[in-house]
Image (cartoon, rainbow, N blue to C red; front, side, top):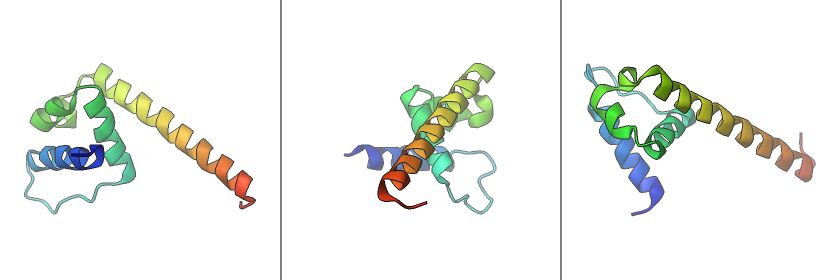
Length: 89
């Protein structure tokens, strides 16, 4: 089983166990997927699946947010560098 398949299964598990899940299912954005991946890397995915994002401590949530922000900056920088190399704007 590859990493992408595993991540999708974990995300689906977390989304299915949310309280009040009678609403229309939310479409996950790239940021949401990245947030679940970071939570998985930090060993917090089980906690998120049981209690939801609100069940995290401020320290845990801040760590996820910090890593998410740094990854988004790196991704943006890589895209800008590729565009410069390609000659596109």
